[in-house]
Image (cartoon, rainbow, N blue to C red):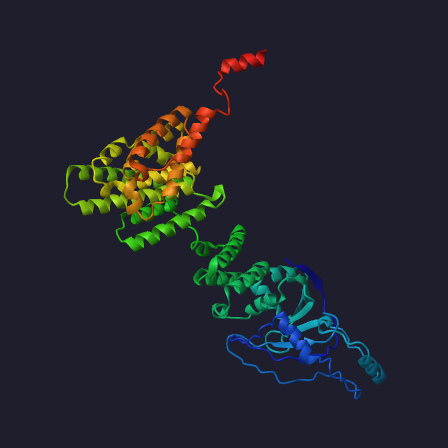
Length: 526
């Protein structure tokens, strides 16, 4: 994470200027951000005002009032801005003569960004520190921390190991620090008795930065407090959640206990996805409240589509497909029972119409889910084999049965768009079983069903027919041709499919493609 250098401090004088900054409730100074560093430098070194030629600057420290607030939680610290050019203490250079100062004022003035950014921070009671920690930031900042050896060795395994390697070490330098501000705050937390109250004021992103530094320093109590914070605080947005989970998983790989945080996004129970999805689908299918049912169907479908966009290794397709097909079979059984009731009795037509429409809508919704998952072929097989349901279809009034024809139309549209790829036998059986019932309900579908799109359904039927062998195309389209001549607009208009079949049959642009395999082999042999 950072480059470590071990050096010893030399005695010398440093020109220091006090900079008033905020005090935390615990009593130690907050480290200002890099922007604050630059503002402090600008305030302490105004370049647009000429410096007096006399008297020369004094070497003694000029104190300015600093507003402090002490609490019982921890002793205060002091933040001072250093003008020396080296991170370690070095003797102060003698002041330049007056003429040199005047010449310097006439020359080009350096920019604020080019000035050294040096900050010194002292923790604890003034004059009680027994070692230095120097942080060299990538943005050119040099932060000198006056700290207590016993505090660092007690709180941090990193400092404990480094200081035990060399006894009497007075200075520890950490180079290329990515986040100097957080390093300083993390060291300050070592002096804090009520760490939880201190962290409560931070954002999730800042806690993650502190956690990263605390993990590097081996600051176990800080790591524990950060994890407790992340476990309890809400995460705002998916991006923040991903950052938290990613950071915590890295800690888990290093053997740090992070299960309470991960419990929010994972479960130890292996059957949760299957059982929960089954429960959700079952609740939607059994709902009779129109608005809530419609909205929940839309939400579940959207979330399942998001799951389909994941890489194949991250999906739960098998579990989801089994659950959905189980619901499909249940709906089909219920629909068949309702058709039997409708064929036998003439009473309670309104109730039967509602129940049949509900089950047909359920099956259509489940089909949409399977189509999105590219797993609808088995549904086409199930629907094509419903000969008993198709037979009962003709015994029911159109007002009860037309919604079932909408489901057949959706299957034809799916096959025509390539969303479903059932076998040739299934496609043929689907047309033989359900095309005529759909044609019988077609007039009602056009005028009594707002969701019915005539052009889309007609194109789907025509394309499905054209996927069959030419002889099957001829049989189905000639039957349609006869019905259309009798019913006109009350029958699907399959003119485009009829024209394609006509050209394939009479114009025959492809010649004799029915050559036997034995003839082809004989030609290749010669």
